[in-house]
Length: 51
Image 1: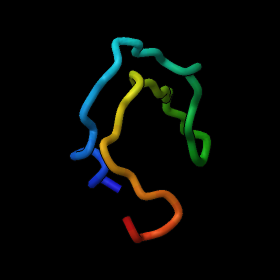
Image 2: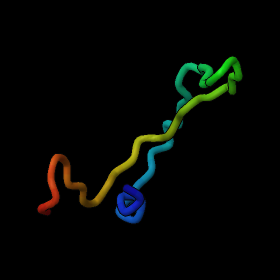
Image 3: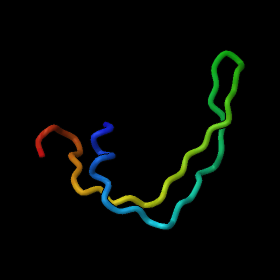
């Protein structure tokens, strides 16, 4: 969730965008894309709630 944003402690200088696409419903489409640099997260729990 949004808590992980507080634990980002380093950002890489390798920002890249993925291939663009379209997201839509009922015949209406909006162009979408995604991208980000490499991130280092200080602490992250995967697959549970205990740290």
